Length: 143
Image (tube, rainbow, N blue to C red; front, side):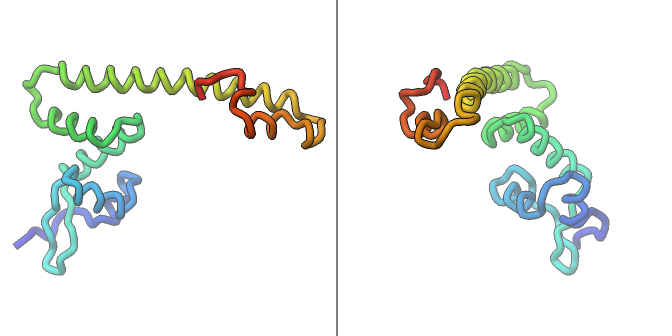
């Protein structure tokens, strides 16, 4: 018979800031282990669920994809394993973030250029409308 101790999904949600539907999703895709159930068939989460969900949430906040988080979770339970896989995953993600920053910089520059040239004109000669209609008018192709 399952223990009556443990957190409900609502308590786990409040403590982590992760919605119950997201917690159930993580369970359904195997990122969170299925918790034991109460006599009334309610999920009862323990400290290891809280730690794992916190890990997943932080990984998502840092922009890691689900597959990367899954791989990192697998490594986290093997503390004596060499760190090269975790390092590779983080380096690949860092490269993706740096590429996004380049694209965002180009996007910022283009939007600033559009806004600066269209502040007081008419729609017929609006740089924003013209640029959105024709990507060739953009100063950067990276966005």
